[in-house]
Image 1 (tube, rainbow, N blue to C red):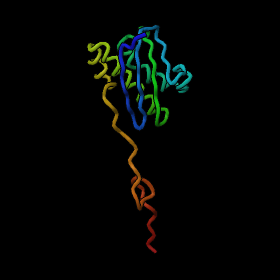
Image 2 (cartoon, rainbow, N blue to C red; image 1 turned 30 degrees about the vertical axis):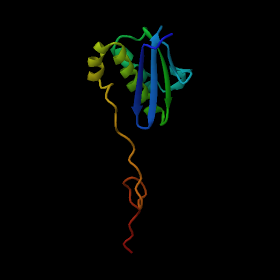
Image 3 (cartoon, rainbow, N blue to C red; image 1 turned 180 degrees about the vertical axis):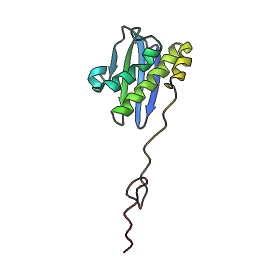
Image 4 (spheres, rainbow, N blue to C red; image 1 turned 60 degrees about the vertical axis):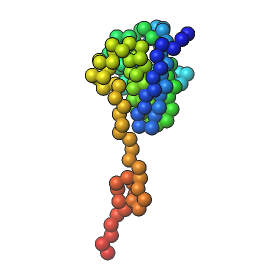
Length: 129
């Protein structure tokens, strides 16, 4: 079957490549079903949100390859990639996806650790005496 839409989603350090084909609404992530890959219901719902907004839950089969980061970042990356792919298929969906904030890349990342400090902003304990 031919891919109808391809989208790349990113969140924190996670990257998701999303491929959409005609089908019955099956979502596969890294060779596993959605509920099996994301065991927390919140993450599974997060991935489905762009499909719910565009009323295309049972129209397409979705294949996602995701790597990097943790489960929350991966779920956000999947949502971003899916929204981009849906926008590629039907440009009319872009307005509703953008209104819900699914097309904007969430640029918040972990701040890097600085030298001479314990963390990104945390200093070592100061001793007056």
